[in-house]
Length: 145
Figure (tube, rainbow, N blue to C red):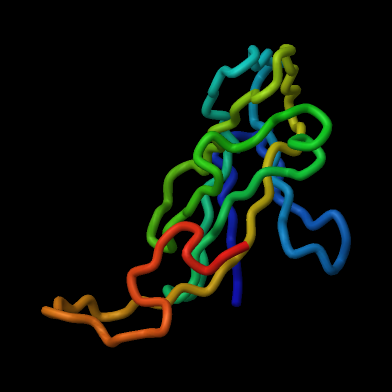
């Protein structure tokens, strides 16, 4: 599998793995100057990159960086992001400051992780009933603690 990136801005940073066996590639902020993410503010941060996978049965998943989340309360506003294999626009990261103090994002700062994930594309069907299971329709908390 190949993952190809196009720099949409000359200052964009190509994603890299922090270690040889890291699952995620670090995405960096492509901004001209530092910006301050105020407490509880959401901002869409550009990466200056577009991407293309060479197969349709995968997607790119954007995830928060655990260090930013644990140390500063910086996460992704949508939890995780999905970049469909046919999307060719700029990859942007919706960051949220979940803390009570401002946080500065600097040009080139690593702001998220990008992971390649397999995707199943099933045929969608409608049915009057579904097969029975032991759990059935039991929802939240139905299986105990």
